[in-house]
Amino acid sequence: MVSKVEILSSISDEIKIIKHLASKIKAEHLGYQPSDKQRTMLQLLQYLTYCGMGSATTVVTGTRDHGKKMNEDSTKDTLNNFSAAMDDQMKHIVDILKDLDDHALNEKDSSQPWGVTQKAGAALINKSLKFLVGYRMQLFLYMKAAGITGLATSNCWLGVDAPPPQAK
Image (cartoon, rainbow, N blue to C red; front, side):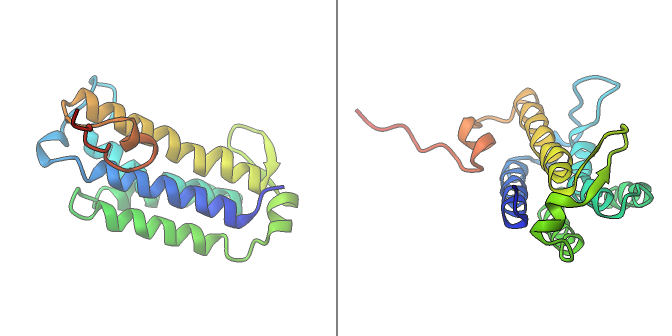
């Protein structure tokens, strides 16, 4: 059984890590694009500002009608307002889940776009949380490939800078 507190805590932690990573990006990195058919760094950041709340909204409402507007709204997001946009996403997720108690999370069916039906709690883990984790990892790899230095495992998994090496 999964609780709403556990789900929200995990999502909040992912958002904290993503914000930490984004704080290392400079304007000159925003155009980085691994290939012509992939997102730029800026487009990836913009997607990150709504992928968790978009999927959480789908889990609760059963529709994807909100997706196009969220995508359009994200194009206004920049490196300067990214942290605030991530905070707004977390607020939206908390708000959309406010009427779901732990019982509902573990009993309410949620249809997924790919035809699978899951309980709402599992769907939030398998969509909102996993989307944030997966795209956080993509952001980290983009950053490494774009030449952003000083990134370590602790940046990607804990959202903190690595401690300086100990003097011998």
